[in-house]
Amino acid sequence: EQSGKNTLDLMPTIVKECGYKYSISSDSDTISKILRDLGFHELVVLVVESGIESGKLAEALTIASDEVNRLLRQGTSLAKSSRVGVFYHLVGILMLIGTPYMCQSIVIPMVEAGRLSLDGTPAFLMALMRFNNTYGFWMIPALAIVFVYFRHDIFKTVKNIPVLGLPYLWLQNRRAIQFNLALDILLSSGYPTKAVPQKMLELCPQRERCIYQNMIDAIEAGQTVSEQITKDKWPRLYSIVLSGFENNVLKGAKKIK
Image (cartoon, rainbow, N blue to C red; front, side, top):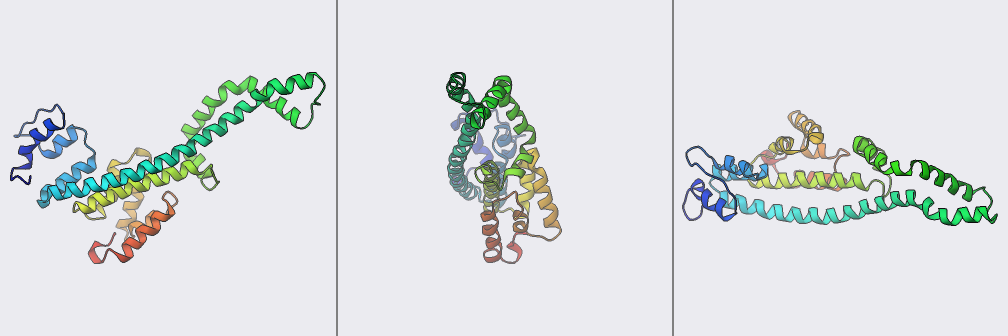
């Protein structure tokens, strides 16, 4: 673009340099269509469209690239912490199932030799062994099925319990990172802030659509974005930061609403 050529004229060269196989017809294809056909994220398409309209495509892409790289680094750091939490949860489940098996070779011989009486802890361990011997094989798939179908109810129940609430916290942080990515990129590309929830509604998974639809309805009713971010589906810190951004940085027509 900076060389003076039309952006669409540069697309065949760009596509070839990136290693994509795509036949471009300058008569019918648009840049947006080409990017969507190549599988680019919708946010990238929006940035390109805005940059072309404003005549500042290179600047918009540079800003968007910087934001994506920064937030991806944050997401990688968060993912590492989340994986540790998930690992500990799995270890706890495996210990719950496996401990009776490990004790079996110790407890049963001692009971048979009369060195342990079947009351208290030995009786409890023997009951666990009998349960595991009967149902242990089915416990892991059963727990997996319960988690898949009832995970939202489970998260609501355990979200305030130390350690057990880590998966819910991870979902909150992931949602905030995705929203912040869209907010930064769309604002830097010239889109009004109130367009961000609408774009997120188009991009988010089906299970999260109600979150952004409620946000859009609230904005149309005169509320601000940060007032919706205070809900329990968002990290508390992100709500505070966004509220401060609204009150102290954005003014007048630029205020998030």
